[in-house]
Length: 324
Image (cartoon, rainbow, N blue to C red):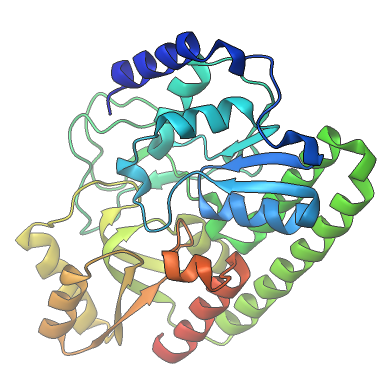
């Protein structure tokens, strides 16, 4: 859905549903804080902080690719009527800004990119450059080349250190909005941030014993913050926010040679990938493949089974122990 179409839809909803403006959302009499989050990490942090005191809604349906997501009228109304709306603030949810500019919000907003220091996304050796016209938070007249940057990387939660900071920011905001339950939010925040910080130490202890921290992804690489925190050298087919799915023969050849020359045992791919590129590189180099879950979104089965940011990152740690 284009920006103009989305803006028109928001305007139409405002005309057809005037009672939504200034009226409490349906079910608000239960006294719980209404929180809407665009992506799974924000949803998970908010539900851990709020517990039974908050009604937390994940806007992005399980299994949906955020870069191609089109909000429904119900989504727009949920954003308009909630007490707190948490979103990335990055390139993949520019549709959010259109909604925020077009409706009369009843509550507050929190951008995850405002909670931590930002890193610029980069194009490393062998990686496909961005497509011309790729929309980023920072405008560039041309697609970046090797060593150049392509705006800020929005995948801030992939560093556990950042995830703990975002959790604390979410907790502070929820306490501000519902001061009568501030102590409960503080307790939920402290507990979940401590779990994430324990996980962070586990990752640090693991990498302390790994001499060669080079990883090759036959996929997009939305893990800049994770790589930065733990000193990982990486090569990948595409930058983190790329919409490309088919790398050039030169990119595949480069990554295959890199795996062979540096005797890298595993080619990685991310969740919801068809991992055809990773499979191709691994087969040519005679190595195995493994999945690294970025936690950007989860499958319906993962959501139903109670997956959390901590549980998914613990799975990543076990996979690293087996495959790195």
